[in-house]
Image (cartoon, rainbow, N blue to C red; front, side):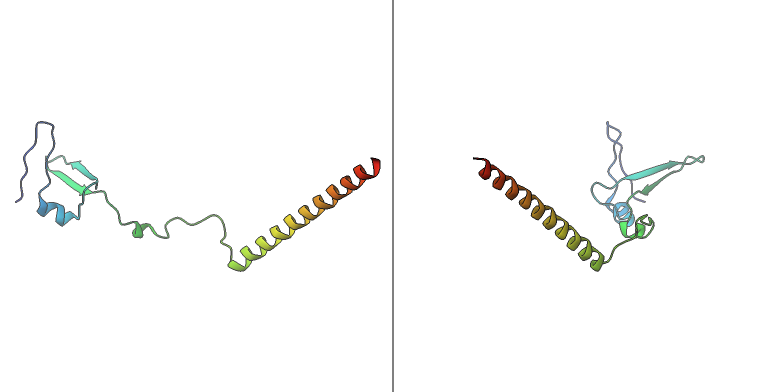
Length: 101
């Protein structure tokens, strides 16, 4: 049975055999369960994130590439029309200013 010594700071080094068996790496967290019979159980708190895949369902429906392309095209047209309208207004102002001189 692997053993360890408690330091003056209350720390222990988890023996290599135990770390390997639990799959613990530097920076991993562990939890301790203090049972009524005096036994302390230690469990790793590290999770494989792939196990969580699909648990949370998005509230928003996804969009297709075609829908994205259509939205971008509409924005380009809107911006072009706004720019063209602004250009016509500015041209009219320049014409009026020249005519009043």
